[in-house]
Length: 68
Ligand code: SF4
Ligand code: SF4
Image (cartoon, rainbow, N blue to C red):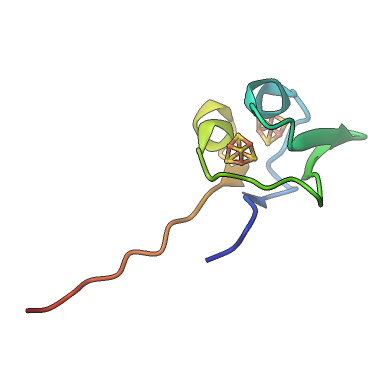
C-alpha cells in the first residue's frame, strides 16, 4: 500500500479544499496543484479524497480476501 494519497495532477484544480480538511496539515498547494508534504505521517483518514470535487486525490486501500 502506498504511504501517501495519490494525486492526479491533471484533475486537480487547485481549489484547496483538501488542504483545509487535512487535520495533519499534510497537503499544500504549489502553484495550482496540491502536493503531499514529504514529512507528513498520513493516517489515511481519506478526508481529502472525500472532499475533492474533481476526484483528483485518492487513498486506495488494498483488499485482501481470505479463504477458509
Ligand atoms: S480538493 Fe481536489 S481539486 Fe481541490 S486542491 Fe485538493 S486535489 Fe486539487
Ligand atoms: S488521508 Fe487524511 S491525513 Fe492523509 S493527507 Fe488526506 S486528509 Fe491528510
